[in-house]
Length: 297
Ligand SMILES: Cc1ncc(C[n+]2csc(CCOP(=O)(O)OP(=O)(O)O)c2C)c(N)n1
Ligand SMILES: [Mg+2]
Image (cartoon, rainbow, N blue to C red; front, side, top):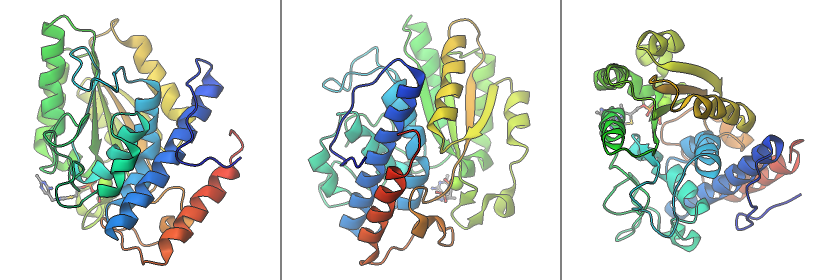
């Protein structure tokens, strides 16, 4: 079956159907990311493709929001720490009906509401301005505490990167979340094994990451971050616990840069991936062919 990025399918409570729904959404989001990248001739396309399953799992399946009212007070919050992943976030916001699909073409252009690095004041649904790495979780902790003090049942999700685990502020926030018993907080870490200048393990190793988070008092799971099935199972485990424990939760998501497009998966890992003009269509074709071959769809 071939789906165009515009096709939408209603969510279903059945797990298998939920997985297929998230996979479809991630597939469409990957097309959106390629389209945005092509408009600029560049962009953080490798990260967007790698993390699309994480965004889709949360936006499609977990997050409580009103597309027509992005500032609805009781909404769940999704905080993007990594401003450069905005391209992936915009794709998810378009999928969620918060940003019009037609607006994606303006990505990174002058006067666009969709700048290359996420800005809260520009984009509906963008809760914080990213770019200065290591601050997302600190803001998320404050928000989670604030929502609890207000008696709100809203949940806070923070998307951060493996590179951000090198930031001391991330661990201060992790301690704070445990101290305040923020069971309404979930961190999602894109463990793509890359951080700008090189491989995470050679720049500044952060393993064993699970043991670190667990020792900070977090309910810790590590999953294949390119498997909607694994992501939803992990998110379900967290949802089952919410309200019953004060432990904050983290999902360490092992992902592949360029996921879904073999040409880019095999390319040397690069923070800012160079894609030649003639390659965009090849990328799109490979993405569509890979999706058509998926057993669970
Ligand atoms: C506080 C701060 N220090 C340094 C940078 C410069 N910087 C930009 S991206 C990046 C790499 C961060 O790692 P990650 O988010 O894992 O990168 P990716 O996987 O996208 O390569 C760095 C150090 C920054 N944006 N903010
Ligand atoms: Mg990284």
